[in-house]
Amino acid sequence: MKTITVNGRDVQVDVPDDMPLLWVLRDILGMTGTKYGCGIAQCGACTVHVDGDAVRACQTTIGALGNSKLTTIEGVGETPNGKKVQSAWLGKEVVQCGYCQSGQIMSATALLDHIPHPTDADIDDAMSGNLCRCGTYGRIREAIHAAATA
Image 1 (tube, rainbow, N blue to C red):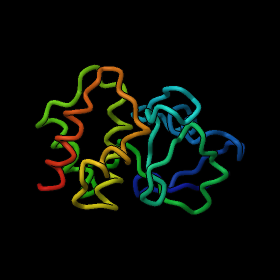
Image 2 (cartoon, rainbow, N blue to C red; image 1 turned 120 degrees about the vertical axis):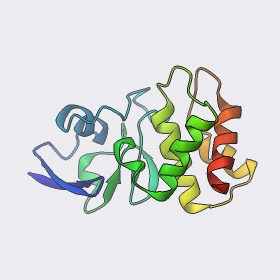
Image 3 (spheres, rainbow, N blue to C red; image 1 turned 45 degrees about the horizontal axis):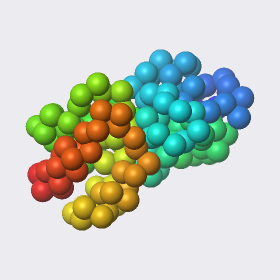
Image 4 (cartoon, rainbow, N blue to C red; image 1 turned 45 degrees about the vertical axis):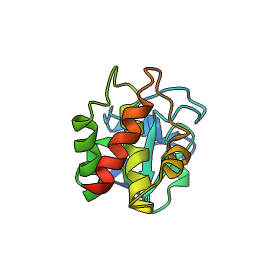
């Protein structure tokens, strides 16, 4: 039995150390906001925060977490920057199909946590690992700038 901290709450899971965090969140804890995209950490749909850093849950094992604190899309809105990003996402009407958006929001929030007033280059760099098949990249950038000035 392992205890992990997810969105400020300690939860116990009985899973093998090599189980990907994505499956622990979705299948064991029922937290389906984190999406499965590619399974090889290339699309960003499964992005979560581990100690404030954006990581891919499909390639992060539960055993690698140690005492780290996790934040998922279900909890990011409780953080100051997460709340700003989610509000900006709505204000700029970023979402089309929505599938990638939880990962996009998680990466954008981590960016603002580390760089409060990012340049376009900072945004491009931080968001480069998040793919959007609908092509809302322009609105994503606008929303990040809006959240940074909120």
